[in-house]
Image (cartoon, rainbow, N blue to C red):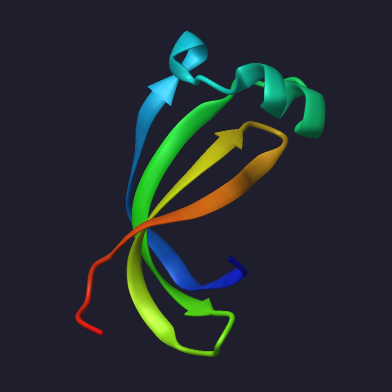
Length: 79
């Protein structure tokens, strides 16, 4: 699903790091070596159909590489 983050990601927190990141090998192969962390937070996103929604996001992040592989976990607001 294509999405665009509108504004800031709020209440970001790390939910896994180091060996706790289950797809470390994949991340290293595709994006490069780094200290990968799985993070979560809340943000407003623009979906592919143009609709704005407030969602809980999960993504992977490494210093020097940045945020990668965003995934919408839940829609926070009502449809």
